[in-house]
Image (cartoon, rainbow, N blue to C red; front, side):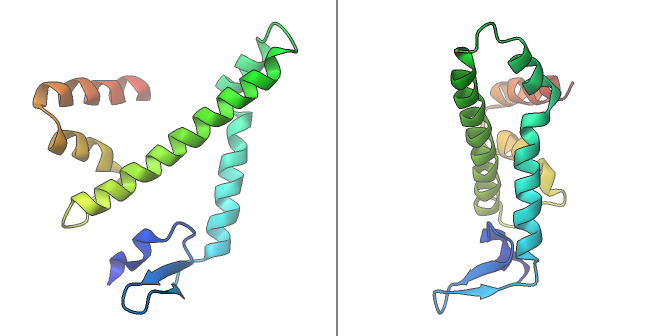
Length: 127
């Protein structure tokens, strides 16, 4: 079954539901871990983050800014993972384009008026 690896956060293991044991999968777990670290650590080099740090008026505010930015990044990434898991649980069949899980969930779970506003918000964020 191709969906066995969907619950694997590390990409190299999955939980066998029958034996309740972790088993190796075909995915390269160490590649997933290293690329995840590179992606996560690269967040601090993004221009919109750096410009906020360069605009700080006092050295005293740097610690607070660091806490806020890291908290925001961790919560945003955790929520993105949760959206993926909710999509796996909600849709009976896999989506043709897995990157459309958030818009598809919006269309499926909200009133059309609310869906229109949320979809417009996604387009505004992309622009």
